[in-house]
Image (cartoon, rainbow, N blue to C red; front, side, top):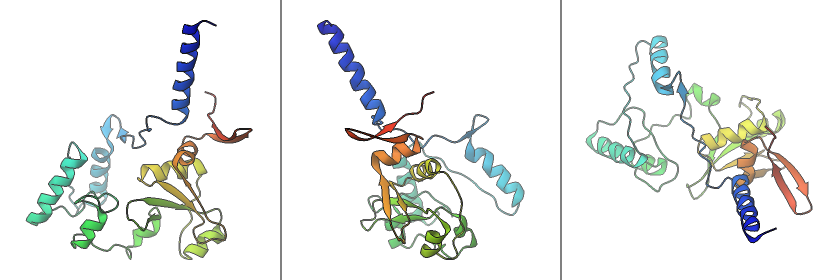
Length: 209
C-alpha cells in the first residue's frame, strides 16, 4: 500500500467514525411540514374550525435570539401573547425559570389535558430536562397511579425525548430499578440502531439499508 493509499484509508475511517458518533451533532428538530407548508399553517385552520370561538394569530421570529428579544419587549409592555415559546432552565430572559419567577406563567398542572402530555422532569440545576419512560404498568403506577399509559417502542421514546429538547430518557423513575439513557446511547436508540457487545466493549450497529 502506498503512502497516499494509506492516507486515503485513514481519512475514510475517520469520516466513518465521525458519522457513527453523530458528529457534527445531528439536527433532531426537523421542520414539520404538510404538503410543503409549515405544520402550524395547517394545524391552526383545523383547530379554528373545531373551536370557532378561538382565533389564533401567530408571530414568527427568524431566530431564537430575536424571538426572546421580542417576547421580552412584549412582556414589559403588557401585550404579550397568551401562549409563547420558552426554553428550559434560567439562562435567558425567556427561560421557564425566569418567566415563572416574574409571574408571567400560569399554572396548568390541574388542566385535564396535562394527563395526555409527555411527562418531562427538570434537573435540579434547571438546565436539563428528561423524558420519563416506564417498562410496565406497575412501574408507571408506582410513579403516578392516575397516569395513562401510551405504549411506544424504545426508539420512538428516544426520538420523542430529543424532539422535546430533553437530554435524557429516565426509565422507571419510581423504581424498583431506575436508569438513565443519555448522550450517544440516547442518540443511537433514537436512530433505531442495535446495541452489540464486542471485545472492545458495547457498540451501536447501524441497520443495513
